[in-house]
Amino acid sequence: MSERVSDFALMIGHVWRCTSCRDALLRDPAALSVGFKLNDTQRDCITSLGDDDFSTIAHLAEVTGLTAREIDAAIDHPRARLRHLGSVKGEIRPGLTW
Image: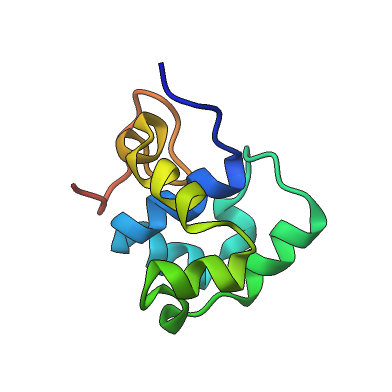
């Protein structure tokens, strides 16, 4: 069983790996954060992220307030690996591939 990972960490873990979702998140963070349990600080953080913030996990941890361990756990979490942001379970979003 996977350890509990916050929705915020799952988003960050997924966009670390999936550049299509990262690009979409950077373009429209409000739309892609629907369905995730985020507090105002986390929403503000997502809104302020830029492509350069994904240069290293250490830097990403610094700008998100997550630890590198939390990000690593999120990257490897089944939910982050198996579902694109903004998708519904069982639905395929056009233009997104693994």
